[in-house]
Length: 290
Image (cartoon, rainbow, N blue to C red; front, side):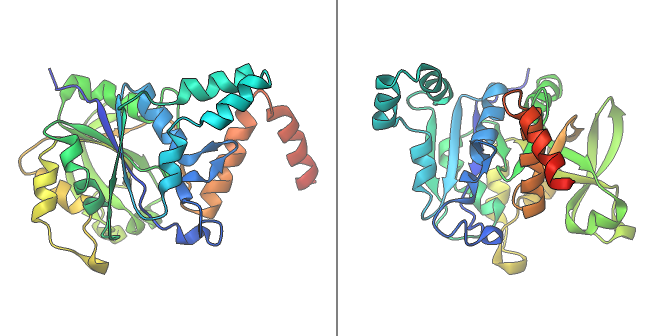
């Protein structure tokens, strides 16, 4: 039986330069999809998958993320005095319990692999989930929960993937696939940003991972690559020599909220699904689009 996964790592140290000036003083992870910050959507997904400890790898000027997952006594007291019981209940329901959040710093922007390595002492010697908050994985059940179902059957290391047009594979990390069973498969190769004619498939590495703790040792051995960054993909390629990796073509839609078009698309898609605002928003869209 695989060891249970109770911790999830959220790299939130990025500068958000693609959203300047909005992110000059506000973390990009606090940009809202309708009325929920992007980071809250990732935490919701992790909690739904059974995660109990949320580890945030932050940087400078990210204190508002920590505040978001803390109690706000003045706000709660005001809501209570004004009889806003439903809003108060929502805040209390979504707040992680005491001791369920940890925050550590990535002092320099050295890449995703380095950000994950910064969480090593908090994660310890146990498997963990890795969620990139920029990638909003809209699915029911959630993407990580779908991955947990596979992990509980086969253990090892898992990566959520999605299919892209072949002419786009050079932008992403790509995996090779064999031994398909339903939407899951064994990963038999991994390459970062290959030319189309060298790509093993058109299945790209998305923003959700399940990793064994040995990944920290592989990251530590790694030398900086292009741009002086340490990437998680290189460490996973080395770990594949000793451990099994599987992929899941998850059922759902990915919105890259680190990109303006992806962010706007997520807002439109999730707003249309909301029973409280969906009908009015649909009517407003029709008016805008003529």
